[in-house]
Image 1: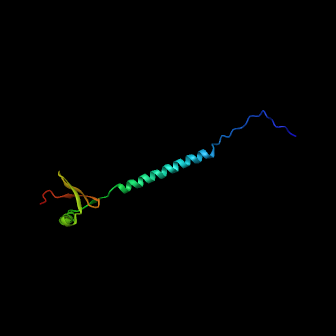
Image 2: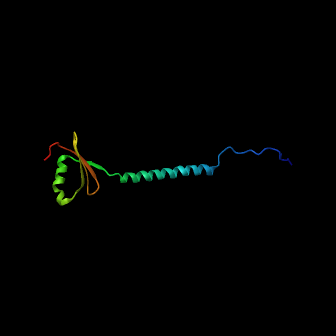
Image 3: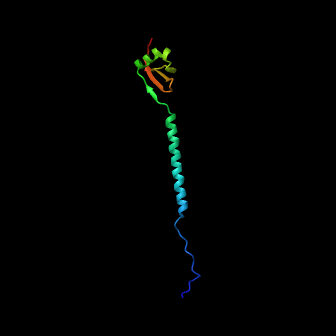
Length: 102
């Protein structure tokens, strides 16, 4: 029988362990899923802003004592007068108004 050489050095594998690689992959997968969840919640919380024409705004304003559609208004005076506001349902709007509007 052939004798094995017990004095030979043991060869070590240079290949990384599989569980470490799988753990690293799972970390990135979970991190990606969390990022997608955060982005999806931010999109829902951002309210859309509608640009109204003056005639659309005037018709809504005229009926507002009965309908209570407009919740908040803010006038910004300057070279161009602009109105910003929000409807009762949470949608924000903006429009430019004429300089002399009686």
